[in-house]
Length: 225
Image: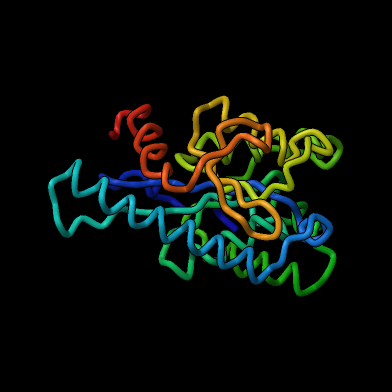
């Protein structure tokens, strides 16, 4: 797929929501219930929409201001796709960084239905960014794509079991780097409970009532608050 032109951030008001999380088999092992997980994701995305509208009216003084909302997802099977699918249903735009060339990345998805789902979502992406990773250094490529998500996100949805990363570029590592970068980080833990993280210590979290303040801080840090 050729890269698409016209970056969405040319719009005057945009909020980008990244995702990090486990693949399908690890979600099941961690005790996630897919139906509950999807409902939690929808609630978070709707809450972000409402906050974005309020911030848009406050900053731009326009009652009918509709912010541009986009989700940043590498589209791996599991958490990445769940967030992308639910975001598209809510009229978010999709931006997809890929760790390898598309043809190489598709080798991760051996089940035909999974490969077809990946292709379908990729076709719906407004932006596709292909990183220069190689299969010989796959861990580094996955780490790089996780960091690319962080680089392009104001908010991160972390579908995380609360454990340290199993390998380089794993979910626990990306969550830690998100917090270090002071990105507003929403944690959806098994089976689908939602909190706002303040530390990689899974015992340290806040109510989602603090999300509006956290998003405001994140936007202020990049000159939009």
